[in-house]
Length: 487
Image 1 (cartoon, one colour):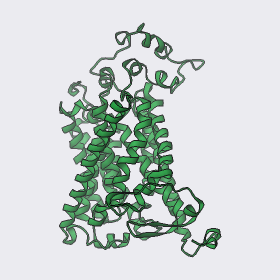
Image 2 (image 1 turned 120 degrees about the horizontal axis):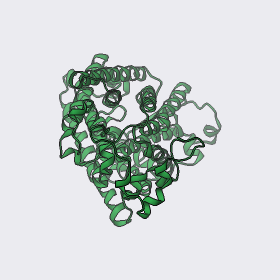
Image 3 (image 1 turned 180 degrees about the horizontal axis):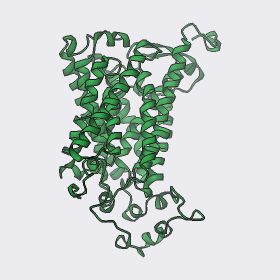
Image 4 (image 1 turned 135 degrees about the horizontal axis):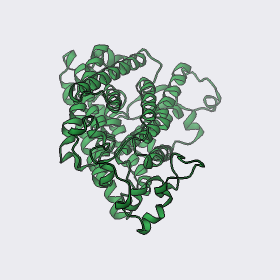
């Protein structure tokens, strides 16, 4: 690149509209993590875990960015690493010459009309939200040191492989697997990895599983609202241009999400006689997830069908499969396996059916659409892509957890003493000042007593087991207290 290109504020290849939209879309996606998921998680958990849950989001966001610019971006979107078709060669993207230059994805043979630093940031916020979604399965008991190590390892050895394979020019990209904006790369991977990590981590204290009231449902709704609105950048930014297909993706995203929320709420009302607010949030999320692989590929009617499926199939998964005894052995706090893995697979599969030739062409692909266009092969390609993402994340997440536990000798789970106290034991801080001068609660003031054995779990205040809030995998089906069956 010539020095004149570097000093020119408007080089010939730059489209100011694309540049402005891409930076806006990236910022919207960042808002989904901080503050979106931070306050959604903080509102959903018990009061004693509000700070820890929100801090996990902020830590993951920060750690991912540093990994991303030093080595991970090139692993996801750079030159293929030798003959290894799953990942790009690692390396930094921090020089001024790199960042001012035009974006080029070499393995995918793709060039955009904005500069590389914009692409680096845009792809970073996707990487960050993926590991943050994964963390929703681990709330309320993961050792914070284990989380600090887990995040960079998982981004490096798991996320980059999925990103390169499907988006960066890897083998699934070459096969023609369709994933418009991350139904597989982000949601299927985070749902699978979250459930897998939750298995290795082990459950919360039994008293917390039996009684897990959200401390602020209104705050949770604020987080969910940020997720929904900012998803316009999540899906609308992936054409890498301020294009007509970006507008289609935004509209379809909202159509599908609205339909999914309505279907989920209706099913709650039919079967449990009450429309659960938390259930509605879950229906919103499953709609957002399911439309993500299809957003700009399908028609508005396709978005409605996908929304109907995302409001019902994950609902069945959560409220029927999720209530089975063997399924409840894995303590997936936010029900990520249902809202992201099941919904992501559902959306990816339906993309293979409803993708249109025009939608693919508007996105810049020569793909002949899905089964609705006579290309039934696309359905099988979508299944192949999903099985690879599921299998790889099952394997790699297990390896990372076992490495942290047995090689680094870092406990994955907090001690029972810390689990009884929560934020005050882990961070020395509490979410809310409840007393006249902002003093901490009685239990937290005696956190040291818990650790020394002066206070035992038997001395802690208990609620009736029939009135407790259970995990999201059971919540939608527990409005009638007589029907709740605790572990």
